[in-house]
Length: 141
Image (cartoon, one colour):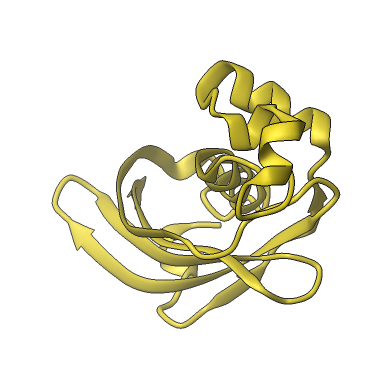
């Protein structure tokens, strides 16, 4: 979409994505090698009673779902910032995630650019919020 086609308050709901145990352990092996993501036995003894996804993995999947909505399209220049990222509930193997994204700010800058800020909320298949955060991106006008 073009920047001028967007409006504050507009809400987008993404498709869902199932998170497998293999996805969790593959991501964690490379980017967050902690026991609760990799070691089934230790994880069962922990507070979540099993393997959970890394919060960073949940954030990456949430962003993927949002980008695939193609709201940024070819007019995206760069991401600018993420604020108030909250990992609210754990993501378990076989959870299905989807995101609800609301445009919270559109700011026009000089040089034919603008800043799009959204509130991204990610939910599991039971409608429980697992992640929330604000994302801002620089876009062409």
